[in-house]
Image 1: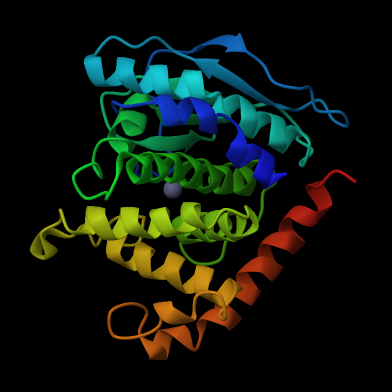
Image 2: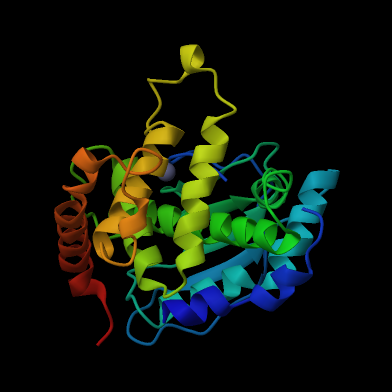
Length: 274
Ligand SMILES: [Zn+2]
């Protein structure tokens, strides 16, 4: 299923030449989106994932909207989720102009908002670091997918009233990491790690937002690295060492990953379509 999701829109994204982050649950600041397209209908309950796009006026939002709409990544994501999960009510996946680089889940509206500015940023901020435009596009694509998986974490915690032990944003990262390891596409996880290491370099350590609901970007990078390594220590053995994942963390990672996978599989099992 996740192979299908990840493949959705990849061709269109490869054509993108112009162009993450996440906030926790917030109120939407963008204009209300109008539904322009809906994916396959869920079979077993009244709820389904639906897709909507709002207007874009500023340049970065316009370019972000062009990319996300042409890629049909939201439609592919909704289609895959409708084949996987039962829902008590609709969840909307919407692209909107927000005036900020962000994405968030709004529990009052049962809506995941993907800001067009985040899409544009995801395909722009890594361009000077990437070794090729192809790698830059892989980076932007990973940013889209990781953000969708993370926001899905917030959405299912809300809509199924799931227990989230610890910081909810860490739980959302754990669902994303788990799904990334199941995607069959290594570059998604690797570029997500690159993303958080790269964004952490823009931050002055003296000004780090320790009050924030998210873990620090550098912590998120090491967490994703640990959980991806933990999912298959043999495949990623060369990540361990002074330049990568410190050995004293790496030794814990297979068990961390096993607990994450066990928790999410158990929590979602009652809601998975047979
Ligand atoms: Zn979040």
